Length: 117
Image (cartoon, rainbow, N blue to C red):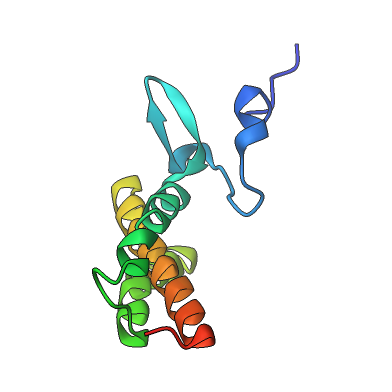
């Protein structure tokens, strides 16, 4: 009997091509895996903060963008080269910060390209 591929099934249609969807790096809700890994879930949640920056509740700067993305970069690189093992809670948090930095970057680029104050 063949075992089913864990990436096939009803959630596959919702997966994102750049997300690796590794089972041990995925958040489970009610014993079912979310369609994204923990870091990608955090990143998507962070991008939803875009209206805060678009409405100028907080004004993004390049330094803020860099500082918000650094934790995810450091976590990803140190895990990739084997210096340490991350966990899903840390991946979710660093992904969220990365998503916020992406939202800031989008607003920063658009406002500077259109010279909006």
